[in-house]
Image (cartoon, rainbow, N blue to C red; front, side, top):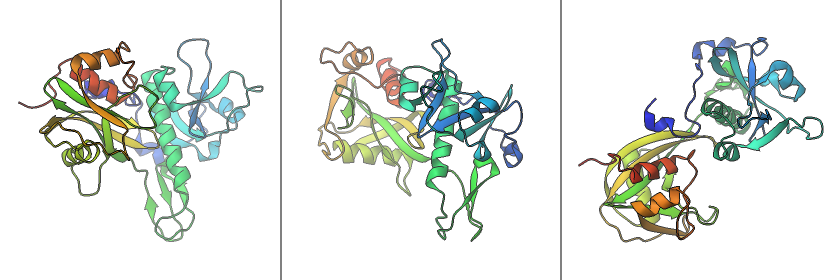
Length: 306
């Protein structure tokens, strides 16, 4: 994996995906362990240590009410097969050592190691996809999970449906020593980030970068360079991080998408990354690809050609 992508949260999937085993993966294997998802939250076991535990043995998962008959095969590590399963939210009085924690908090608070964070992110995306695709898009009949959870089969019309990810560009426009940052109305007060948007059908990554920057900020950009990527389980996207050289700098903000945007110097962005901004502005957490784009800009990495 590229070193830049390794810095991004949810990106370090270290297990063997073992795709040849999917059709006959056995959740009854005594060595099987399960990542459990309850209403878009991961179940984590409190360990008394800074890092919590996201993987449960079969007996533990059964005791937590997990739907192991619909477990989805994630892959295999040195200890055995790994599965994802849906589970109910634990009752605090009966299972005080297990908490349902939202994925953003897990990442921003560093509650899991990189590999387990990637594993539960994959589990959340896969389980969420199944929940949203219980009926055939071709004929409307109910579908059944298949291939270890990596496919759904419509027995009425024979259609096969596979999990999808939504590609999203996230980018910093750069003008010399300054970069463009913006904030959405749903951001917590004071946070600025990179602009982002979904790639549209028939569009290249580079064209999506240029279009989104023009639509949301009113600027024109030329050269585009890829930085890194990040799986983003909200619900199931692939963030494609880029830099773009600004050809124009006058802003015309799309107020339906963003509430503020401005050009910030390297010094200002460094202060935002370190939470030392005089204006009490700050960057997204290190687990977010936007943070790593901003850091690469501040560090003066070779981010754009010529």
